[in-house]
Image (cartoon, rainbow, N blue to C red; front, side):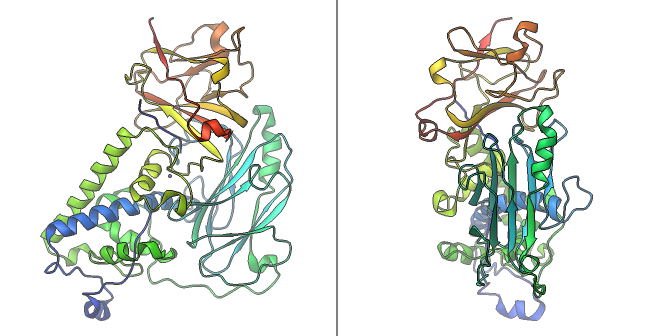
Length: 469
């Protein structure tokens, strides 16, 4: 069985052998005379995998905080909320969540902390604010599970802040990077609930500390390299080094990565120092390109063979500096929740280990005792392959779960869900999750507030059974 999930990292130090060249033109150089081509390739592969989550995290940060042409743009330190469930036209985030519309914000705490303010939320409505640093570590949570549904104010700080916590703050949320992405999710009960959702989302606030304390604005921190214009192609070329050199200026160096960053510096990966591939001999660039290709190959192979996504998301301590897993998480579904918050499972294959195909009909059967165990709620969402986007369909249903109105259970309490592209018949449409026509597909089950058996992999997700037409 190939399990998949829903929903999404770094390097630095100083060059040792090239300081004279840097002082002359502030340009990073590779001492190819002391490094074999194989060494350059190995370091480039490691750096490419390490930086992959950072780069794709920045894709969303750039769209939200910088790119005024993007529909998700709000500017830094401002929420952009979406008061409808996602549709197939929403393609910014792969394996997008369809249950809890987003309130998202790119945060920059380079100059000062920011205060998050949340309102009182009804007890029967689940919400969460997930704090993701530049590395894509889920470093903090605010919401139903962790802080409850009462109003609150939370101080978001960067790695260098050493000020006093002002009055009225419930908790300090400390990030090891100055660039942060916040993924807010608020449960939408049904389409008639949209006005209530909008009212709640409008009360999510981000307030610069100087405004909260009514003091003068602080001095603006200056970085040597500007934030780059995000281009997908950059991560398929040696330009990925220059992009990381810019982004890693915003990241703290963890003590566990000192040796790693010394290695990265040997190929020119140094925060704040430009990297220009035109200044290197062709054989050096060729070695870097080979490392990129090998990194892609390893990432793809790992993605295709993963069976457990439960430990791909979490804090630095929880992920134990497994940089490949961090890259896999970003590729499979960036911004996935820590398993205590939500568990994701699903499949690209059926019960017979065959790929799920849109021209087939399937049933997904849960016995009464094996229904997903959730404190809050659970859902199943359909995606096409390989894009991992939602599926257009005549009933505009993109997910189904225990909160779906009209869902029918069997007399003995079992639940059957129909996975197929055409209607299973009017009497069964209440339990129909449409699949794409003539495409491969996958589904993701999200369990919000998972019970211990789900967290500990005691509960198992059933697989679809092929139905003969």
